[in-house]
Amino acid sequence: MAERIIESVDGELRARVPKGLPLLVVLGGTSDAGGVISQLGEYLWERCGMDEILRFDPDLLLDYRSRRPLITFDEDHFTDYEPETLALYLAHDELGAPFLVLHGFEPDFRWGQFIDQILLLVDEFDVSVTTWSHAIPMPVPHTRPIRATVSGTREDLIEARSVWKPTSKLPASLTHVLEYRLQQLGEDVVGFALLVPHYLSNTDFPDALLTSLDGIMAATGLLFATDPVRDANREYLEQVERQISENAESVDMLRGLEARYDAYMEDQTPPSPLVGEDGSLPTADQLASELERFLAQQRDGGAHGSGDSPTPGP
Image (cartoon, rainbow, N blue to C red; front, side, top):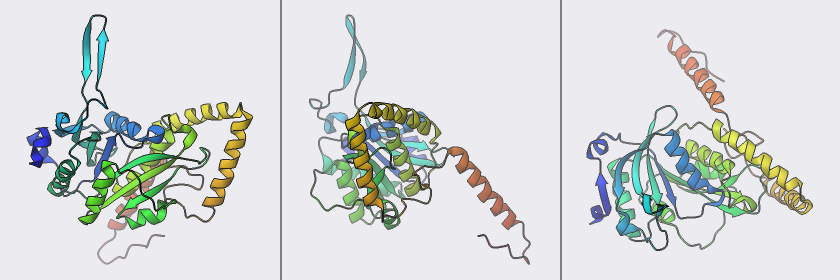
């Protein structure tokens, strides 16, 4: 019964998908402060070579009246109809490592059936870890690193990165329920709810994408190039700073947010060994340099004869 919601399958590619890959869930329709989900989807399309494995039937899962597809009217006729899509893809990171991506709209209907199908796919491909991220608007300043509420089974990431741990009832998204089901089954899953400045929540905030990519890298071991996003973030922040500096009330608001943020974070632990004290992430060149240093150490260690003991590292 669950198979009926699948519209099409590339059987040859499906058979060639390696076992044990991580799965990224990138579904629109849930909280997307700072445009983190839409930015992440665009990033993956542009840089990760998304090849469709299978596609779900939108006629069974989508409420067209609430989310109408786009179509172009060109003077006297319609062109470029853009139907909503929801599919599973095979993608590759910056070093060519493969991973799975579930990308598209959040289903309006048949949540139970859809989630059952995803659980079957997780089992079929022996998914190593399922991860996702979204963002919620919070009274935090843009001049401080974006933090997160981390959920799931990865205690190491929860301990290192989760700075806000509320207990609250909230409207569930499909991704919430999928994480819940995966955790019940003993599968490895981790979610990142980024805490984005409320006054920037209606914009595409590049720093939210940077933080999302950093969390995904920490959860999966994948490597993504962040230099282009970092450049876009610098330009974005320059514009924000100019606008705020022109309004005394905005300056006062920012100073108040900074003071409360710093007081709250005073006793918090660093979010990640990859993140500097100022919240900066390593560049692609820095990551490549560190990888080369590690590989050189491995080669030096392997050069010792069987009677030699390699010098311990630091």
